[in-house]
Image (cartoon, rainbow, N blue to C red; front, side, top):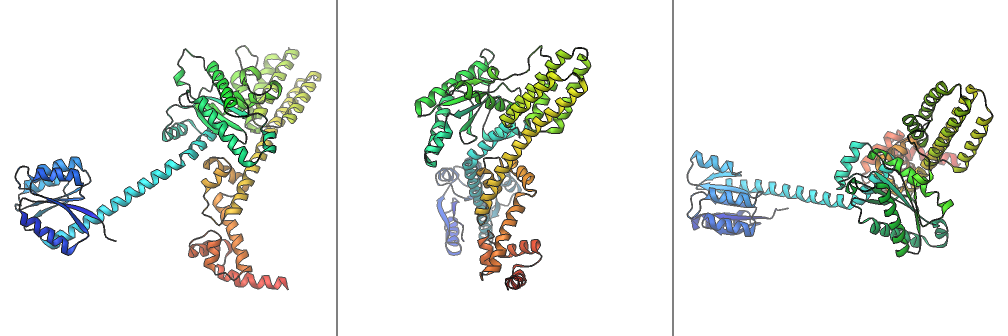
Length: 548
């Protein structure tokens, strides 16, 4: 396929221009001579208007010489190729032409064959450059289309604690987020379960979209606020605090924003929302804790009713100066239980108990109070980690009763460790159940769509997880990575078709998601030990034998 290029011929000799034009018309008619110029000034003006791909510039010309014109054109059109032509072979001319980025320096009379060869080389280079530019533009456009999903994945990683500080800064910069969030809100649609039973799926989705738009309208005045749907009826709102300054209290500002969200949703829709607010995170990596606190606060809607703002400080316990438990160890224990990490929770609890027992061994009544406080802390962390509330309540009540009746410190320590491990196990079981449910949904989607060009990113989107976290979780639950699982599903379907149809191997490859039959055969042989054709013969014979 020929490359469309525009050429500007610049020479003060009309016969020279005519000769080059004639040569081009005869040898390369698809190379368009856009215009001619008789001096450098005219050439600069024409170049600015026509934007040619290639300019032939005679060096010795009146008004403005070719080298001066070349500088002007280079500043206007950096990508235009310059070919300098002169009857003089002086080294200084050639050196200056090279300094201007000349593609070639030709001597008159110009050899036609050399000129055509040079033009073809430049045309190929121009074509390659255009393809790169088009591909870059296409990729940028595709990336812009994907940014909402990338943004959602970023928010999900922040509230799930799946991102390090440096990575958070890098991804925020890519997304154009100039200020990282340090406070989390959870907005929960009141009575959504009953609404879901009464309406259609389209009505539910439209309602969620309207609620989201209301939240975005209410948060529009908070610079850098991030809003995203995170579950069936909940939205996360992540807030940076840079614009508040030292004079404004973040807690009060967040409560005012929550109240504005409630008003806006009430005004725009037929539903109300409850807004839970977490505590300030010192670092962006602590945002998962702030979000867990916001979620725990929103659950108190059951006691206080909906259509209001509930701050974690008002309903949950946290460390304060003067508390009897060591603050740093307490936070580490709570985080271990919140994440369902049994061994880490055991180590942290053992360290706390060792300090408490050494400090308070002569005051058992006070020690019992401290241990009950530790159980309350762990129970709250378990609830924030997603453990079943009824199970947590039963464990907490059992522990409280046991400690009141135990006078042996060793037995008390052992019983407390057991109860704390039970709470960590409850969180782990709840997480495992949620993770298994998510991966089961992903597996069903893969099995229903394996014939398509499935990507890990597309499947992760179906279960609202970031690709990185989904990949790790899939491997953890399934014991194999996404690609291996997809291959196994495809090959299972391929074997069925090989044994039960007369379709050609190429057609079967296409049906199970392989557009290259040769690659399909390679994958099949690697997994099964036979090529598809051999498998059909051997497997078919076995199949018929078993049927008989």
